[in-house]
Length: 136
Image (tube, rainbow, N blue to C red):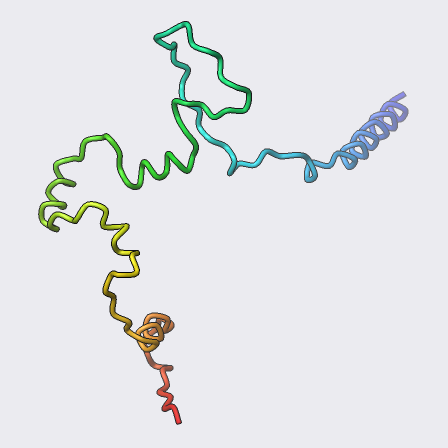
């Protein structure tokens, strides 16, 4: 009886281990973790006579992720801290719309040439392997 029980347990464990080989966890469908966006909490509207939103329309309270990024980068109605105000005061007041005027074709810029790009693109190191090339 003991031999029969051992053989039965051995056969059951072999079949259980064989069944584990048929499970494939590598090819399952996964969500895109970069497409996840936080949702604003639900808010009770002050006016209950509102029309329900159209299907597929963006939520009017939060905007898209790119709009939120632009708001975070370039500011909005939030007050600046004392440190930010101090840094702006020390740097000097910039003209309003400076980002637009810098990209304007009428803005005077200096072309430093290819040499500056070559120096900036040079590999880092201690300079032991640097060689000078004289153009002919």
